[in-house]
Image 1 (tube, rainbow, N blue to C red):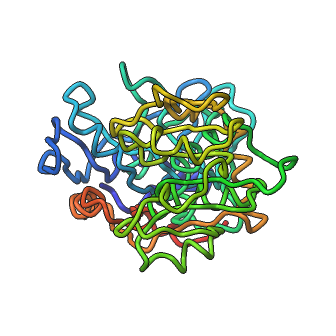
Image 2 (cartoon, rainbow, N blue to C red):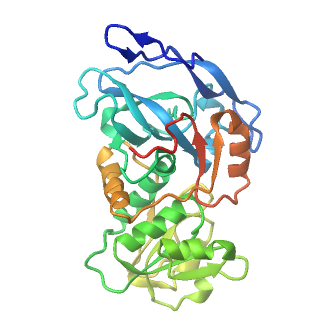
Image 3 (cartoon, helix red, strand yellow):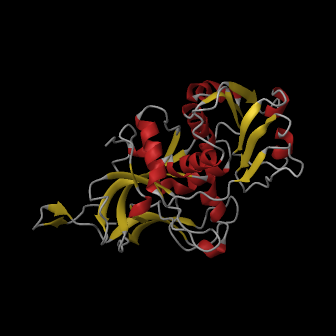
Length: 349
């Protein structure tokens, strides 16, 4: 990679380089084996087509779906990664909302897991549709912003499907089955910001103080008990099963009110109950839709008003991607694991 950009003499500005540092998945990576995930110094820099923008990436982060996708041979070779925060480097024909120099964030995961997904976040530059890119929150550094898009969009869209924001609901109780992971720490904040009086979740006691600071009111040590053992019958309005363990819907039914809702994230064998309480709405979340910047704009407003913050106690350099993946695969990360890509990482713009 040419780390010093060549100046364009006529304009007095730096030209976009032709190669970049990045991560390439060269072939399928069997579960827990990341030997096919390579750091490379001279990947080609992509060029935006009509309606697309080129983002100079400051930071990214790891989602469990990143390494789960690596197990599928049909997805590779390619540059992985969903979450980006950075600066617009160039825009394609027809782009009018964004311009070079804008500080932005995005989830690059547009497409279908059955066919192809956009990806490309774990490199110095990436392409995205202008329509899916939002302005980065002014209150967050690039590193913090990069920890949020995929997980936060997932939580936002899940809650929207079951009636959020809940400004007109009194004494609302929301259960989030797993509080300490990437979706959990954000879901707690969104539930509180959108009207929940009581936010119930599970986690390890070492994380309880943090989860309370995010808005959790009732905390259950999952080593000792289950959420359902602690709740009264007919006391819960919404269950957001962001863990997706098999049998959770059945276990939750007694606690749910007859006009309550149960929504779960697929991928770990979770399912709706075959014997639901009458009146309870059950939803399989499906897949996150990252195509509309308006959802990111909602998250930006929450962050800039102090109602949404990042939780990312661990971060790695791009060159150390295998260590970062191994840490994520271990399953005990608090919040998100960050990936530092450029010197802009800790900057707030």
